[in-house]
Image (tube, rainbow over all chains, first blue to last red; front, side, top):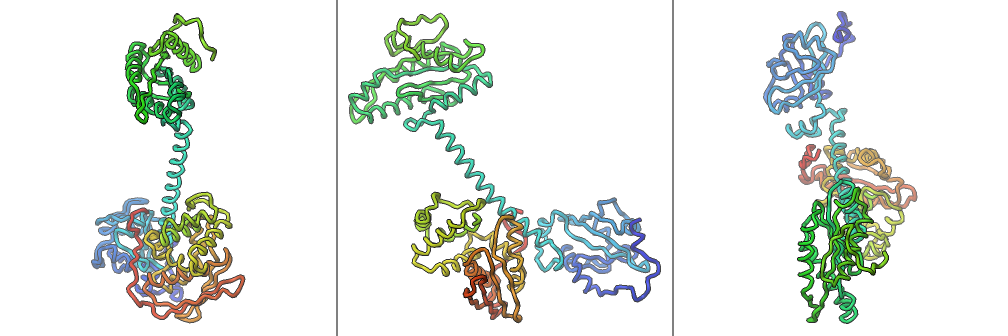
Length: 348
Length: 197
C-alpha cells in the first residue's frame, strides 16, 4: 500500500521533525491533526475560518468531511489505508466546498496529519468564505491562479468586444455592398445573391421586372433632384406592396426586380402587380410640381423551369416586360413559353 | 507597441481631456483611425506621434503627461480591473513593491506579447527603496512614478517619490516610505465582485 513507505517502525530520535502546531499552521494553514481514533486534535487557521469559526477540535474528521475519492472512507482505518494518495473531499456542511487533500500517518500510531487545498473551484471557495491573501501559505500559488483567472477574463472581454466590433464592421460592409445608396433597396448583387440562394435551397419563387415609364421625361423636365425623389417614392411603394421576406432591388436607373419566395402562382403575382401599377399611376410631388410616371411589369415564376436558371428566368421576365411596354404600358404580363411577343424585341 | 498600451494612452487622453482632444490628437498623429484596438499591435512610431501631439496640444511636458497617465491607470474607475490585477501583487504596499520585479512576467502571463520594462527593486532599508526601470523605451519611468503614487494611495501608504532619468539606459525612482498606514486605503478582496472568474 502507498501508506507503508510512509510509516517506518524505527525512526532514530534525532531524525524526527518536531513542530509546534503554530509552526505547522504557518506552513500549512489548512492542516488537520487527527487522533488515532479519527478525532480532530487541531486545525490550521484557514480551515477554522472555512468551518465558520467554530472550534472543530473533538469532532470526528469524517463527520466534518466526506472523502469522495479515490473511495469512500467511513472509519479511521479507511483513512489510514488511503494515506499517501490524493484525496477528493467535501465539506459536509454548506457550501459543501470541495478540497484536494493528502493524509500521512504520524509516528508511533499517533494518528494522522491531513493537509488540504482547494481544487479547481478555488475562486468559488474564495468568494464563499471571503478569503484573503493572508489565508494562503506564502508558497501557495492560489493567489497567482486567481490573478491569472482575472487577467484572462479581462483579456477575453477585450477580445470579445473586438470580435463584436469586427463582426459589426463586416456586416455593415456586406450590407453596403448589397445596397443601392439612393433608395436603400438591394442592388443587382443583392438580387443575384437572393435568386441563387432560393434556387440552391429549392424554394419556388416568383419575380417581377418593373420598369418605370416616362421617368426620363421627369428627369429632363424637372431635373435630377426630382428624378431622385421619384425613385425614392417608388421604392417606398414597392416595399409597401411586398411582404417582409420579399426582396426589392434596384437593378438599373429606373428598373427594379422584385422577388417573392414561396409565391409562384401567376394570378397572385398579377394581383400584386396590378396594385403597384395603380399606386404608381398617382403623381408624386416634388417642390409643388407633379411628377407623373407609370410602371410596366414583366412577371415570371420559377416552377416553369427545371432546373431554374437565374439568367434565363430574368431574360424571360424581361421579354414579358417588353410585351407590357409595347402593349401600351401601365400593365403586367406573365411570361410563358407561348407568350405572344411583339415584333420588336430589343437585344439584351 | 502593444495595443493595450496605445489604448491606455487613448483612454487617458479621452477620459481626462475629453473626446474632442483625442480626436484632434488622432488627426495630428495621422493615425488614420479613431480608436486603438487593445488586442492588436501597432508601429512604435504611432505611439510616439500620439504622445508628441498630445503634449503639443495640451502645452504640457511629455514627462508630466506620462506621470499623470500612470496615476490614471490605477485610479480611474474605467480601469478598475487593472488596479485589481496590481493589487494581487501583495497585501501591503511594501509587499507590492517587492512584487514589481515580477510585473513583466505577470503581464506576459495575461498577454504573452506584452512588453513591459524590466523592473528591479533594491531595498536600502525598511522604508527606503530604489526602483530601476530598464528597456522598452524611455518614459516608462515617469509612468511608473504615477503608478507608484496612486498605488501608495490605494494601500493607504504615504510615500515620497523621486525620479532620476539622467542615465541613458536606466531610469531610477527613489521611494521613501514615510508611513505604512497613513490612511485607510481602498478595499481589495481576492474574489472579483463582478463574478467574472
